[in-house]
Length: 286
Image 1 (cartoon, rainbow, N blue to C red):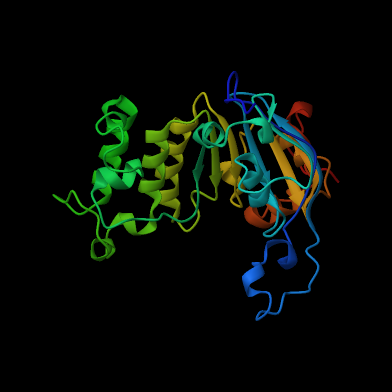
Image 2 (cartoon, rainbow, N blue to C red):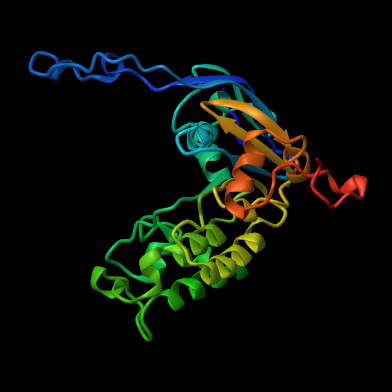
């Protein structure tokens, strides 16, 4: 029987590989007589991925674009199923968990915010209007989320509309994404480039709000701006669907020559050849 998510909200990948389904696997029989299927092979996107995140820890997925980081997060909530290997949440294979329970346990903050022509409340709750009306926004987190949503709209407005986005902070969606996360308050948080497209000043403000939302929660963070992941409990460096490095920031920057050091050097114009702080050496290693 399917189970509910119970216990500490850990996340683990054990020898996980994944390939997107090919056209012949997902095509509709009614269209096969008039459509020409894409014959290109799918190919593996993830190859033998293994790592674990303990409950309450933060793991950062880092690497070049197209390396498979977002695909890994999609497997956690079963937007796709792993081709082989096991993805587990709270110590249980996600395939054995009730789908409603699993997705209630995972909260996503993506790069895009989807808004509806409706009230602030309806946009935050994202649920049928007569279902559990008045319950969710009664909590302290809910009121904080509602206040954040209200600040994103023009002064005095209680309704979101497409025309209201012009010149409004809601246009970048950052406040809305955080507000929805605060309202849901899930034990597992996935942040997929949550501060992308923001200027430096806005990024700091948004990151502070996200840090508060992540307190006490298991967090999986995808970030190209490495300044936002330096304090992660674990950094997993992904390249072409494989894990090529893992460790904390200082461990990934040492020894030199790894992908993480290369990316860090590119962003901050610092030599990747530097010694770990534990040695007390601050000058570049020659």
